Length: 218
Image 1 (cartoon, helix red, strand yellow):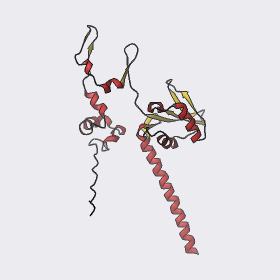
Image 2: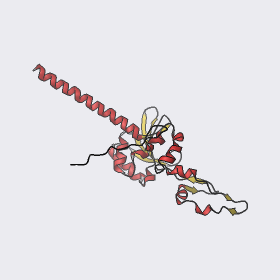
Image 3: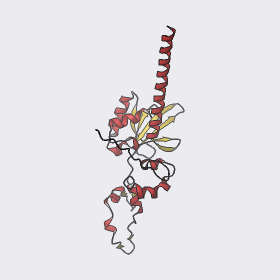
Image 4: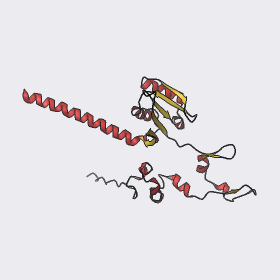
């Protein structure tokens, strides 16, 4: 006799009530951090690094801390020293999609961050233009960083195309800019998919009703 499958136990955050992997998208992420550090440290290693005391360097006397050479390799990878001694944090790997309306009529979908996943923007621009039969080009954005401008509003369809064409880009790494706020595409993608499924079921029900009515009248 086959062994009876055991129920899966899902862990939920005791602060916001969401699964731990979605706390960062919730409204009380700062309040969740202590609970996450204690109960789900593997999901948020950055929180553990933030708790570690930083090494100090006394530049005026030329005396450095004894532990300054023992900083973690992960910490070194996250920062980059710029001219003048300034430190720049490593960019977070994420794709930002934004719909921009120009001249009150012309709509453009901008895609930023694909290069962080090893994607060549010129090749991605050609594939996007071919897929959606529209114009697409690599341009410099407001911050002088390169981005892809695609003609038209393809903000919903583009998510599925990106994840299928470049598997390293996950849905959880794609975000939308709406009303000046950054939102994870995962929730938007699911809500729109549900709306589409409801519409399909509704149309199917109407078709079945019409078929049954024709048989009854016959």
